[in-house]
Image: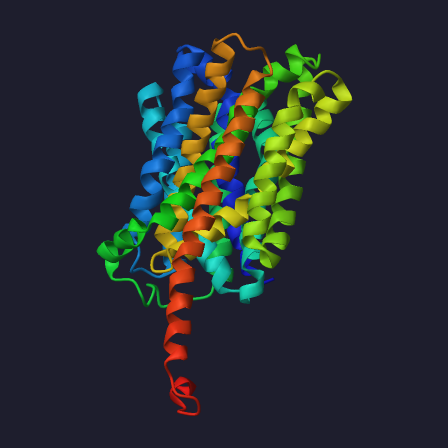
Length: 407
């Protein structure tokens, strides 16, 4: 694998750290800015909104630019957003800075995935994407805990300055390791061409699979802390270590999914979604003891992230004329899954179905994801079958030995 993938992973590590660290810093931010914790929670939403808006918009607007230049510019915007977060004098300015920080998130992963796949042979495309995503999963093991500790001891502003430093390291890595390119895709016709490529039904079915599949994860993961403390009996101080186990599982699943998808993209996707549904289905049973709860959290991360690189690659293949935009749109779909899954899991809790009910809601979303993926598979087969039939029909009308089919 090319060393340039390391530069993409460093950028992904910084993005993953700033995305998830806010959850651990909410009490500190709320106390310092004299706002309530629910009001501070809007800072998480502001970042997610930036991702959803920025992912397709920035990818489309930069379609004609050198991908190397785009990646460096996106990371510079990331550094600016986090530096402004550290310097924000009040809640409103911090909300704006968090929104700015989220804008380059999706486009970086989208364009980065395209760059990663162009640097390896076709049989290693999924593995190259999984290595870029490795930075995101490792962030949950090391980056978020370290940044949270930094915020607790040095103040939350120091955390965002530290993340800015990671962004600067990523810029240096990208400039040093990413090869120069001529920029736009040969098949691209600018913004109009990029947007036209998203009109395809298979592309939207692939994006729908992402929303349902990762919505299943976030329906449960958003409420994993009350599950661990209320059902499994863990102390609140143990939750950080258990969330690191989730990161370990996610890292293993990400690497495994990349390898398997290079052999069978659709088989890995179906197997991953089925595994995720099964883990979520037995989640309430595993939450009855501490050892099995720790195992459940690890398996949840592994089963969910097995599907990460297959989903990314499938969307890119369905929109071959606009892979950067489609790949970035898939990152927006991940964030919609985050918000939607958390909302559906919250409905299960509000309905009084029990502490572990969000996991069962997630299992139903995993089944929905399998259903959407099955429809996508049927559509693909229907598109291939008529063309194959036409080829057989033409062949049957060509006189033997005419040589017409040799051309």
